[in-house]
Length: 343
Image 1: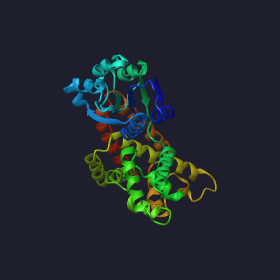
Image 2: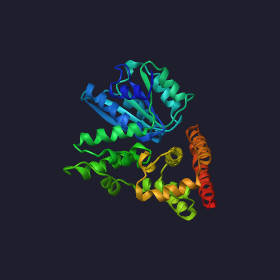
Image 3: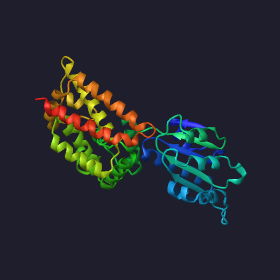
Image 4: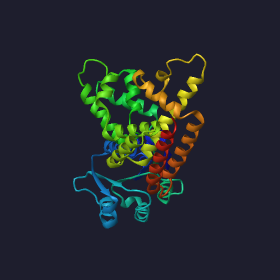
């Protein structure tokens, strides 16, 4: 069985009773982890279960441990849910043997969390083809997805948020669910019993992780043509472990926002352009934003978006993650040098 996007999300919340093994994958590990947790909860509703977690080194070092967990029946009658975290095809040979087990020998449920897998992936194909397995492909959050997620999360904590504050919060999220979850939790704790909706000033004061803020500052300084400051922020980003694809997406988001601003400025009678953008550019930030616009006219921004798209495809390709970081660094340096050359 294979599912992707919304159908994969529905399956995670209400899995087919015939499914014993599930492969969950996607480029955003935080999204995959959240849906793995949803699937575990769905299985636990059917019967009380003990969750065991193994990483790929555990499985490679002692495959028998995994098979024992899958086949053993608990003396207390509890089910077992085994969660394995891996990358790419490293465990394919072992998991292929798991998929070949007769259903009657399997007493446990298995969740395999993976990263981005293309359509030629052996592991993905094997889970899609097995009658008692499912391959669930999850996509990264769009701005709309993230807005809905944040609003729903805060409502579950009896917290209200202004529309403008929500736009600002979502626009500042770092592009991967794990950090976004941490930021939502931080905001919910702050706003508990606040007595009013969360405002923009609350968001700006509370909701910036070091990785997030350094990455945004690195992007803005590179596009502004400030080499020393941009390089310093990039070094902080690398130190925090932010993935190249997250930095690429921040560039894409800012380049798209600048393209939209260029289009709006070209319209006759256009005014208050900054507040029409998503996320908005506040009055205090507009002079710096406009200075960047002068350095990056529409044709130049269009070429930049194309390069970023190519770089993202490289990062998603098999073995591309190792190439993406040096390529992202090289692009970053070329951008701040190009912007610095424009006076």
